[in-house]
Image 1 (cartoon, helix red, strand yellow):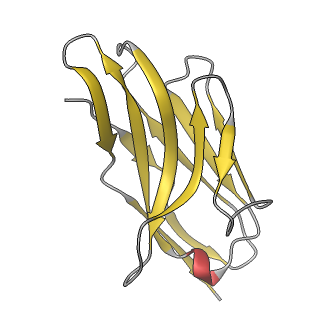
Image 2 (cartoon, rainbow, N blue to C red):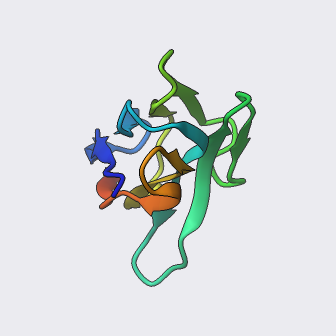
Length: 120
């Protein structure tokens, strides 16, 4: 099973910045989509940002202009730089990866989540 390693959550004041990272195993065959979603208490999970194999990106409306998603040269680690954070950005952030593995073929996996808390 593909295991994702998330890092970077924590407590930050409103207006501050935070970077989240998500690493997939380097020995998988290919990654089609890597990205971040978030879920606040009592709300549905929503898109934050994704990056696809060709390098294209897509952002959720609520974070456009404040977040940037990027990936390392090996293309199995992504980073989400979040700026001008607001209290409403408080949520658990989940990494999501879709790709294929040499052993199990197609996979669609979620990380365990990392909590981001923005204080006012």
